[in-house]
Length: 198
Image (cartoon, rainbow, N blue to C red; front, side, top):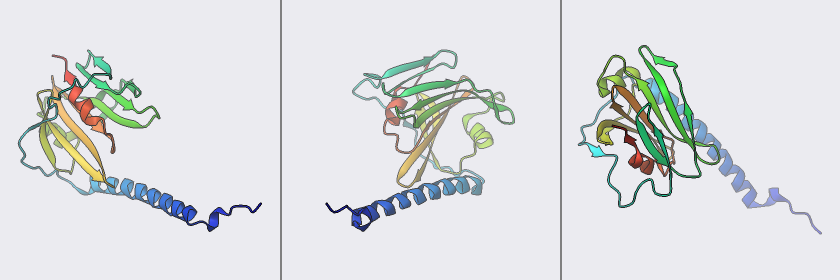
């Protein structure tokens, strides 16, 4: 019986070229992201009317999902039942007078990080825009949105056809950073379930 020679088949070479292109694209995206954040010195703003991140949906955003509540940092959210949520009580200073107090990370069943919610100190009592400019300058344009009725700024970065999202809001003198990795199709539903405990 003749032995198959994979190297002589066009499908084999197409797969090799596709893998090489994917690898090169990933490294180009990583390099571009690092250089883009260090090249721009001042964020540009756009004037857009506030949009609501928590738009009403006909269905309950938590139906058939797990619910997480944190009474110390006063928020709750829902996430897919097959995904994992981990808490990290961080106290590392991030810059000058602010520090990451707490973080929740949501991962898919395969362990891939999908979303996170970080809670930062705001000991100077800065307004949201001033805090972002001082402690987390972002060179991208942003949209004014709301998160559970609180004013927020939404930053989006698109690379290789995928959109990464960072949303910052303030509640009881703490800054909340809600983040999504590229390709997270459930982020909008997680956001629509996010509530501050008043």
